[in-house]
Image (cartoon, rainbow, N blue to C red):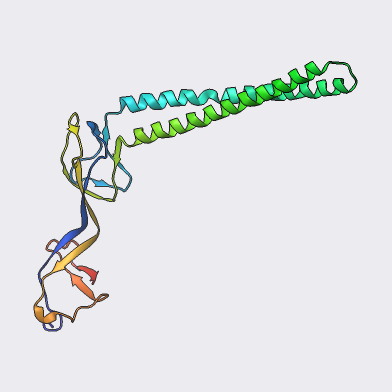
Length: 211
């Protein structure tokens, strides 16, 4: 009966609404979504002009080609070590002077130093590439949640600086706020169920909500 199941008015709201912004300033190059469009978490929304960052990434990729130098220096060190071993054997038989022995040992040290230097350069190039790629990725603003685009604040070609670009509403789950008499205070507890009937109920059976 109506007394057992009282009806109260209320409103259905998104679980949350957020303004999506950028940590960088720049010119909007491309907007990949429109108002009322459903977007997924991590999906690209806005791309800022990034020609400088793209060029920096390409330059860092070229610097990474020092891998070939690493292999070359490894071969040079291996050759120096083999030569040193041969000289050591000849020194024992007095076939070469101790000067040749010192020269061979010095060449091993130099080859080892050159190899370490190239390895260090390669490591620095890897770090530069990661940094350049990270800066480029920041030019693409992605959705922090899955939801619906409620509003778009900017257009392509517009300069943005610490301002909201889009508003997104998370629609799953939804929040239901109901206005009830003060006499019900203390009678509603977490975990209780309620039947929700939207004004536009497509299915006609309503939905079950949990306090």
